[in-house]
Amino acid sequence: MSRKKHETEVEQPEETVEQEEKRSIEEELSEQIAALTTELDQVRNDYLKEQADLINTKKRLEKERVTERKYAAMNVAKAFISPLDHFELALSHAPDDDRTKSFVQGFEMILKEIKKNLETVGVSEIDALDEDYDPNFHQAVMTEKVDDIEPNKVIEVLQKGYMFKDRVIRPAMVKISE
Image 1: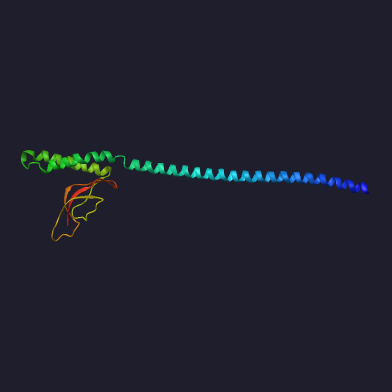
Image 2: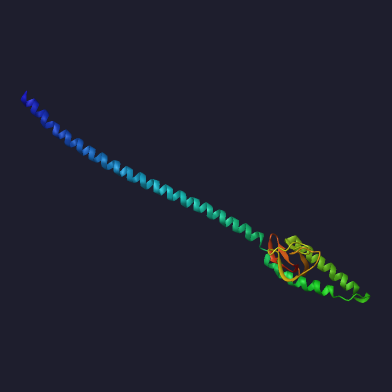
C-alpha cells in the first residue's frame, strides 16, 4: 500500500507541471487573443475612418464639380458686361434724325437680343434705383442730402450692376441719400 501511495504522490507533481504548462500556454494564448483583438479593433476603426474620409472627399468633389458647372459661363458673361455698357452708352447718344433712325432701331434690337441671351445663361441686372442701399449689391460712390427721401436710399444709378445666377459680377455704382 505504501508503494501505491508513493506512486500517486509521484504522479501528482507531473500533473501539476502539466497543468501549469497548460495554464501558461492558455494565459499566453489569451494575451495573444487580447492583443490581436485590440489590433483588429484598431484596424477596423482605421478602415472606417478612411472609408468615411473617402466618402466625404467624394461628396466634396461632387459639390465642387456641380458648383464649377453652375458658374462655368460666369467669366464669359463678365467679359460681355463692359461692351454692353458701351453699346448702351452709344445708343443713348445716337442722333434722333430720319437718316439714322433705322440704324438706331437695328442696334436697339441687337442690344435687346444680347440682353435676352445673357439672361438665358443667368446674367441679370441688379435693380438699384429707389431701393435700400445694400453693400452686397451696390457700391456707393456719392451721397446727397435729399428732402422727402429717407437716408440710405439709392437715388441715382451711375453704372449698372450685374449678377450671374446668385453671384455678383459687378456691383451697381450708385448715389445714395443721406
